[in-house]
Image (cartoon, rainbow, N blue to C red; front, side, top):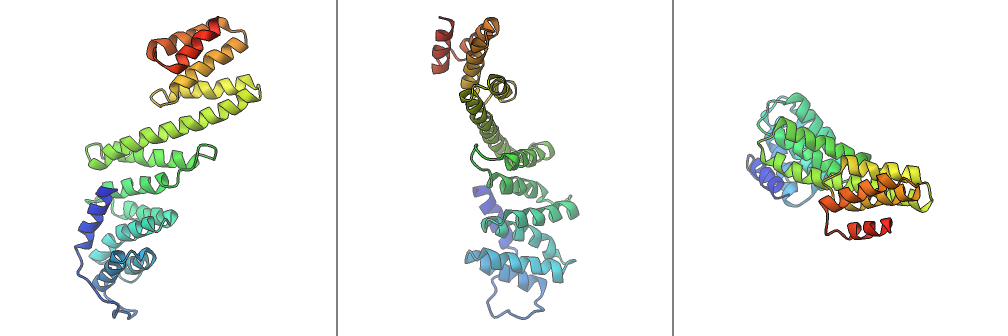
Length: 243
């Protein structure tokens, strides 16, 4: 979040401080920008966003209107109005694809989704939207600082998505719905190999294969687990399956 704060501070320096006396409905674009700056300093995020949005409405062709799209997005983000922030960012991305701050806009869009990720027991569609948004940052701006941070967040998102697969798999296992459980654990093994859940997923595969009487498949899963994670508690448990 430090990069965001520094970036926004740089934008804010483009305008000088204004006072609350500027209450006329026909303020100039610069005056509206400065008023938004004042509200940002007071952490009045909703009022700041309103001022920046007004620039787009009343002065759409001014140089301030371009900056205001990003500033309103940041204000909405801080106010946890993520849908509004994404709308502002989408406008910026659509109309200013060559702007020097375009990488930041893509990154901020990813953050808006990322901040809404819910616990693994709930629907993870927002996690996948965050994943898609951060992948856009990496593909489009691979050498940027934003891409480096996006990679770290993608790793966390993968771990989260794998966690949901494990949660559902454990539920099916308790219900003795073995095939459905196996499909969930296999999803982790096949697509989330770098996450913290891979060791248990391999053990669960071996466990279910054993229950189903597929001894060779069970032994193969145990071998993979032992080869990659010989000191894992899950490997020690898996060894007991063959006894």
